Length: 235
Ligand code: C5P
Picture 1 (cartoon, rainbow, N blue to C red):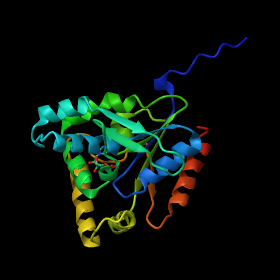
Picture 2 (picture 1 turned 180 degrees about the horizontal axis):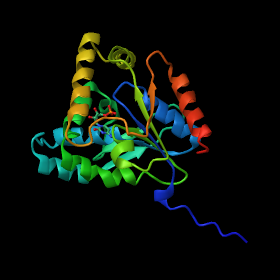
Picture 3 (picture 1 turned 30 degrees about the horizontal axis):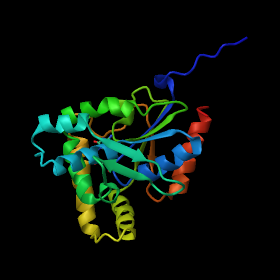
């Protein structure tokens, strides 16, 4: 009789998907997690939540000690939605879903994300998402810092112009008033902050598969990554 040892959480496969905002990571990670039946970590949402908590508690972005406390004690629940519904995110009892993806909160997130103590306070929480049968992890440092032993690392990019247009369409669809030139500026500023920060800067892991999604539709990106997963025998 063969006795199979139950897989430990840290042995669960991880698909680490990193890249700048607007590279298509969020949507493609959701599709991959659904297809594979794996858990999903939207690490950007954690940084966004720290930004919202800081604003709610009137904590200045230069108060690193208080930011670390907020990051280490985030009182958040992710309530999954059915089908295409993204679900709800409850922070300290308040549904913050509607503001979570706004440009303003994205900018706040990239400021708190540059604070080393905030990044280390979120490490354990992020690693706890790694549970069998597997994890799709979406972020900036999934393959370099959070899951350096990830089973497959992917780095998605796209031109700034195309990323700004994708974002413009998303925000327009949500009824937000936006200007395309302003979005290009915001994306360039966010890229600069993310790639130039001292700790966990945005960069591909040396062993990451690089995919430039400029001119690709989301289904094409999804199929490209699924092919990679299958070729490597991950599923
Ligand atoms: O991916 P998203 O746009 O939600 O991330 C918001 C911000 O959070 C990013 O611009 C980045 O500064 C920060 N972030 C990070 N590390 C991650 C995920 C997000 O620094 N793993």
